Amino acid sequence: MTNRPMSEILRNQVPLTLPPEASVQDACKRMHARKVGAVLVVGPKGDLVGIFTGRDAVRVLGRGQDPATALRRVMTRRPETLPPGCTAIEALRLMRDGGFRHVPVVGEDGALVGIVSRGDFRGLEQDRLDEETGIWERIA
Image (tube, rainbow, N blue to C red; front, top):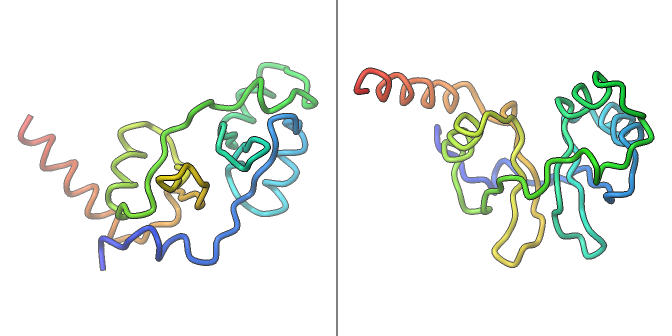
């Protein structure tokens, strides 16, 4: 199947979340321990306020910023999100068009459902996106 629903991809997922006050160092340690590439930054009510990724860590530390810097200062605020009802190809399109590898999944009520990354998708889904991109490039 090349167009799986998000519910299949998110099944049994417990995303890594931290408050905005957590440090870059803490986020990096937890991402390393969980073997994930992103932290969802959540407010006191569990609402998504940002995302911090491995790319952000490289940017922050590469600039010589203090690892004790709070996530709120360096996270991507109001990241693009997807609804739980979207499909794998829709998620891949959004990541390709936005130039990022992780997308939070948020319900209509604003509740955090999970996160998907480019690596969550099978070869057939990636191939379909590549084929689609090739068609649009030939048309343009």
